[in-house]
Image (cartoon, rainbow, N blue to C red; front, side):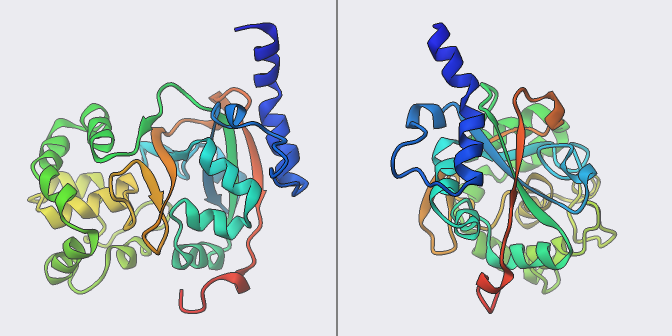
Length: 264
């Protein structure tokens, strides 16, 4: 790496921050695509400083992995409103409303992209589970890998509603969690998943509640908005303390609740 290249990289986070905080946009190419591709970003929510100590709220005991975006996702945050940018990376208005009503707020973490980032395809997700979860969990999930790839989230959830969810949705049950934990037996924690049969429906619940594989995930390696449009590349990496990430920086994401869809 030449000194000029190194200097350019050293200034990238600072440059992105300046453009974002001053709402300059990037129509004039203030930050190059090459610089953006060096970066990664992660939207994190919380109500206090402790919530923002890891890439993903509550740390690896609750979520082993954090979902992050690449440079194309960060570019959206320079060009669009914070809410529209959240929608582009897969955040549904109903989730945003719940978070804000729970007195939490969003921050955008920006940092240099790690070589350990794994593309968020089905195989990428499964490979991380194989590596970092107990083998019995990996075996249960791998048993349904073909069905998970083939069937839609809505079809699997419809079956789950008729069985172990007892009429609720995965989203409803996730709302019972406090600090990443819930006493409701339908909330599929690691312990409950180890104890249960591990049906397709229970497996999808574990992926939803513990791995963060949302309703909009389709295994393409790209985020998808609520209209089904593929938007930006997404990745998974280990959920580590942000203090251990060189050059890491948080940027506040203000959201006006009046801009949320009224029926969300």
